[in-house]
Image 1: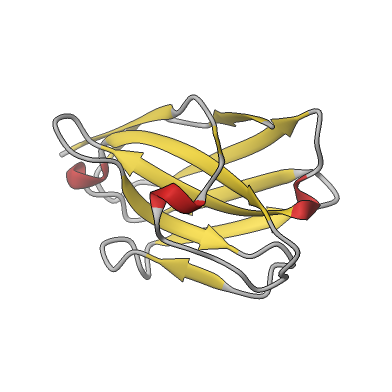
Image 2: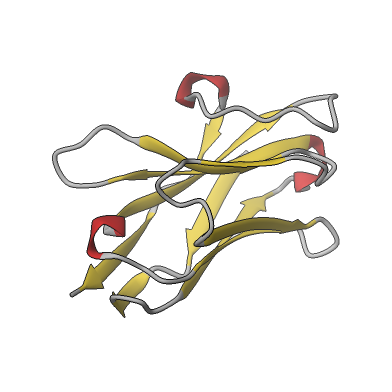
Length: 126
């Protein structure tokens, strides 16, 4: 599965952005999905995840209450709505996928995801 992330760009602190992730050649309905991010000089870290049947979502503490992950299986798209952005949210954001039979499975562990997009850069200015 090839994942295409988009929607990144420049935002001011306290602003908003919405990221999208679309797979090519496959439907997302068979996959649990997640967003990770990697700031310059830092490891790639978990941001948010959503289960295959849209039953379970999970968030990193650093984004909880500000970011919302969602999926529209009919549009074959996963979103990350980011509000009240902070300069420390500046990073390349990657979407990730894992095929699973479970409708409730999610994970915050990078190694549990098998497919990755190329990333989209989010820059938040103060």
